[in-house]
Image (cartoon, rainbow over all chains, first blue to last red; front, side, top):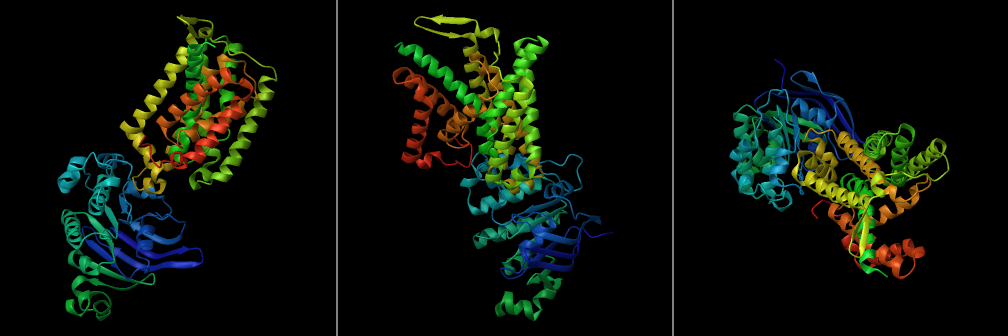
Length: 243
Length: 289
């Protein structure tokens, strides 16, 4: 059986600078994989390249496979229709649309590509706060509510692989744990997630496998338990008290 | 001066301005794009309607439908031609190529339809309604009602329908729209087709009021520009109000001062508004109003 996501020889460059060079990164079905690293390590560049989405115009080469099927060369919207769903960093929702419109105005999978398809009601069941604010504009939501909406909107498209770029950014610690716990529940329910996080503590709580990215390269990979014993990780990211 | 009659004229001209501008309003509001070939597309709409009636003898309503269909095709073709520029939102280049596209349309129309002024003969232009001190034609009444219907329909479609939400998504963030699994280029194509269809519809309804010439496009694009900018760029209701206001202004200015300086006066109004309330004129970023 092939992996849910298999990245091979991926190179992403902006202008002259090579942003990311990942030789191999695999995510197994039904697992939550985390990519951690410092600011500027290329985490966003990597996860955006998997979805072939960017606000700039990067040059991407190499191979990205979903269940063995090559995705390289497909446009961002084609990725979505095949079940690869990115929630970008910061702004993942439309401020000028209401909460409900944000959930409704998506391309629903017609044939179904294998992921669980969420009705608007299912999203409200997952995030009851969104039901209370269904008629409000997304622009009036708090940061946490916006992040819930972005995840809910992504689930509407029945992803097989959910790519989350820094969902914790700008959120209070308690909200971060709640949100990541919900993501963990989704993974227990069968969803596959690749999570990019600068908040290593929070990521280590919920992920199965961690990949450490430094200057665009994967320098360490292992289960959370293994990574907790890796001196590089402990020193740089987890601190002595968590070692 | 018959003030009541001038007000009626102003309302009619105002609705004509608004209807001619509605396509550009959506184009600018949703796609952040401009089309300086807009006036020539108006001219083509009028001439196609005229040609259908003159060459085939089909009745006026059929000519209106034909003009609208051709307008939609013309809009979609434009989007295809300028696809790269529309996707990269290269406004300066787009201004120049659409100006050129308009000139090409004007040249082609000159070859196809000749240099003589023509009359788009609507049967409703001959029927008039007299109400006390004022009168207007049935064509005018159709124009005003159609304008209200188009604006109300567009407003509802934008705010109540799935398609309208998609258009507002593209207006806010085209890149993010792709992550909803939507093809942005198709939404743009729909917006351009609407722009072409709307301006052709406006032409088929407005043109029977005056003789038509293949060189009349430029005046239309100038007036449309003023309506769209005064309306608050991209605002649907704003364009309606601006069109109506400019219509009343030109009618009263023409009657009280001089018809010869009307266009100049409208531009003076535009400049005054830009100086006094610059904030109100900037792109609103949404269709909230």
